[in-house]
Length: 270
Length: 348
Ligand SMILES: Nc1ncnc2c1ncn2[C@@H]1O[C@H](COP(=O)(O)OP(=O)(O)O)[C@@H](O)[C@H]1O
Ligand SMILES: [Mg+2]
Image 1 (cartoon, rainbow over the protein chains, first blue to last red):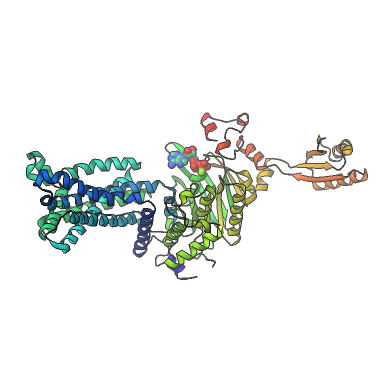
Image 2 (cartoon, each protein chain N blue to C red; image 1 turned 90 degrees about the vertical axis):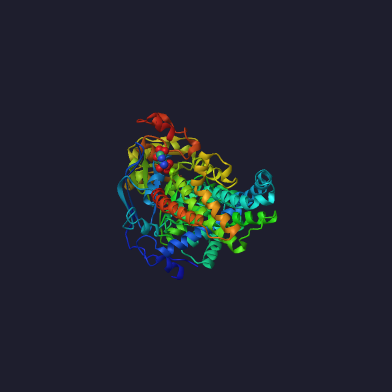
């Protein structure tokens, strides 16, 4: 009998998988998700093409109208686009999870002596890499068309990390839809319904002051607006503002509610 | 490198022991009180037509579905309460390929190996070994999308054998395979059992159960309607028949008279092939018959005792002919069915 075989025997010979095994299994599942992406490059369009296209499109489309010139508009729009694309990307988590659970290979995962949470945890881990790619691309394209964030590289990196953390938290909402819905297209539909008002009715693309009063009320309440403001404060001014605290608190609240819900439904179904 | 299974396999005499398993989907009982007992180290066949409840039964045994009633023990461990322990003792190859379509064959095996606790290098080695053994080495780095049904099935089986499981579940492992691949798979299954594993497989093919399984459970509408060795099942249906072929066609009439006189039975003769068929007799009478024929100088080309086929068994037990697969449905003669409901007609 060799080392690996003994490992399966593990510290928990009879009962459920232990924490160490859960982490190892989840990492393997994340590796699998990345292999899938390697073979299906379309899966990366939303984190590669979308940030590039949106950045260019919005900068040149709205730049003149809102700020007078494109360059002046970039400090407003780049954080907006960053948040919008990355948060939108997190929808995919739910849809792919659902598709995956419907496939035959899931039967094998369920019959293996692995931590049952691993397929879910692995999917969420792999998604963080997608968010990172989208963040880097958005900032890069912004830089190429003249965005010079005053906060400097360090604060830009912190801003990107913040967006990744928040998107990861939001992806729990969609993961919840993913594990509870009947079909993958159902997940897509419900998720869009939640996502669109949040990303569009925010301060991501326009200054709040230009909006009618009733809309300002919603926009100011919208957690996405707080996140956008936090990113602007970090990247453009190099300050850790109150918005940052609000964003992180919001992210934590989402995870606190949706992670246990998702895991419960998932374990029941898986 | 032969890998022994890492768990001290419980020294249980029974690999599977299921009592009164029930699973309902809505108000339809897919499995309706199934009992199964599989001895360790044997091949057990679950035989039944489409929709009989084979997959549902297997999934309950393999911890993939929770039974609504009854209980299943795998090597003595409860399939529900001790599911994690049971999962260390089993391998499952589902009816529909339980492998990742978008990945390559090698990547599939590496991912499953890693999940089973093999280290990075070990997982690579094991993957290569299995690909070689299952004749997939040339296709190892192609995505499964491009694989034929047979290749997919073989990979599926390979994935179940990364760590040789004490008990392997195979759901219709050869459905849709060409005869050559089917024979290969049969051989692999036999080899596996020779090396100490237990196999429970489902099949719609009577021949497969006959060739492969030590014991067979015939399942119909979620119930086990017959259980035993292939021979027992055949014997339960009725007597065997004796077949004689005379060497010279001119002897046929004389031979037939001798058979009828010696065995005191009625016979059927087939002049074209020079054959006589009679209900089987006991061995003593048979000896008398052979002597009587020799005394009269009648030469025999062939003599055999033919047992009923499993087809006949199935017909006798369920009142319906079994069908080989989906495509052939409707070829069964509805005239045989005594207790048919219209829905059933579609399922079979
Ligand atoms: N998930 C399910 N939901 C509803 N009905 C099901 C489900 N799975 C199987 N059935 C029904 O249960 C019966 C038995 O199915 P199954 O176990 O797949 O049979 P077999 O594998 O012998 O073909 C069939 O009538 C089938 O339609
Ligand atoms: Mg089936």
